Amino acid sequence: QSALTQPASVSGSPGQSITISCAGSRSDVGSYNLVSWYQQPPGKAPKLLIYEVTKRPSGVSNRFSGSKSGNTASLTISGLRTEDEADYYCCSSAGSSSLKVVFGGGTKLTVL
Amino acid sequence: EVQLLESGGGLVQPGGSLRLSCAASGFTFSGYAMTWVRQAPGKGLEWVSSISGGGGGTYYADSVKGHFTISRDNSKNTLYLQMNSLRVEDTAVYYCAKEGVYGSSLLWYFDSWGQGTLVTVSS
Image (cartoon, rainbow over all chains, first blue to last red; front, side, top):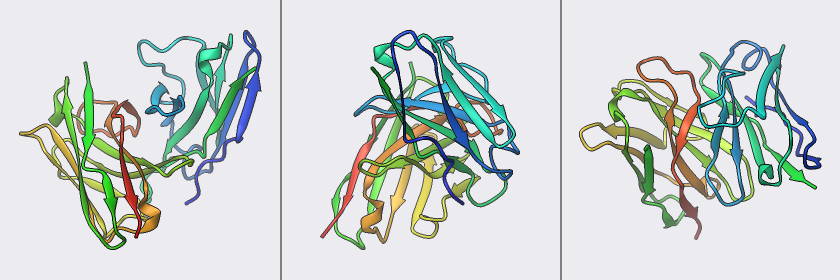
């Protein structure tokens, strides 16, 4: 089973909004509301931003929001800040197949 | 505060073995599934293996099935990954991560991560 498909890079200016897409299939994103998103600054461990498609853990800014349509999930970051510059990964359950969890290839966000 | 501390990484020759450990604190360890995720140098995240809170359920990526074994010792609040027949392509930082939901349900999201331990497989 292939990784979920994300754009390799996105960029934006401070204060703007950007959206990162995560394309999957009927076997993963399309079948389960179990999409999560992670932020990974350079040289650091990933941090959970969004789970179950739209939910935010306590302590995560409401500038981060998630959504899903069909087989594609999306992460939107509003009011971009320089500290948002990082790699972002989507993740989905893949159900009863042997591959339980699949990650996207990652998107590097540059805040210009 | 949840803390996850991995150890056991290092340099090993192809075909060799290593056992990674992840010491957990700050939560009821036995109540949560745990997962190993790896990241090859300059690459993305890859799910490796997960284990239920009680240890009775284990899950593996096809790429490691048959040569990695996940286990846990709830009396020691420690997660393990036994890695045998290591290959060059197993070179990565290995993270342990905590499942986000308490109990037997697995929602496959990870709300706490360790800092990772580097495994290098090279001759």
